[in-house]
Image (tube, rainbow, N blue to C red; front, top):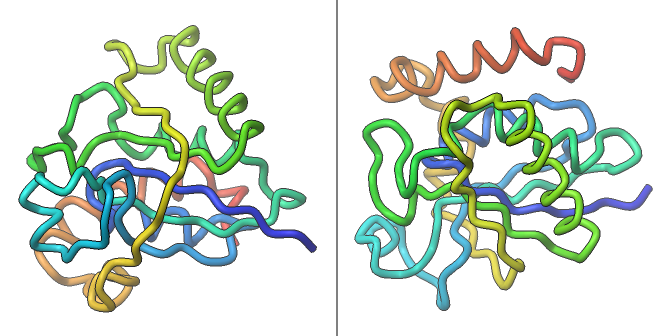
Length: 176
């Protein structure tokens, strides 16, 4: 069974990780940083000066879930129309981004983005960055599985839990 990687940024990585971790066909979801030039700490990335976006890197089985399906979930669980912002989180580190790992992923991303625009799922145009993957830096250990380990933390209750609930409702048939 061959695995594939993708790297997606949709605001805070704490919000994306629990969603993708529950999808059938997804093996591992790791929170981290991508899009910048060098390894950086969370505090440095939060400054907005590193060029990194908060991302999740997803290892998945393309025989069980297609890259296009991952992207459709991605475009459902964050707002891809707000430049450098997700809710109250503002800065380039919170941008919507797809860091494709090969030409096939780039082509599929372009197709799905066109589909999303054509279907007018969002009232505003997509501002999602589509860029070649260069490097991924895993976030510090305390960021990994954050929602699972801190379900009663304020941000988790107010911001993440509603996104996860929406995802579970929309994609119940695709859950592990």
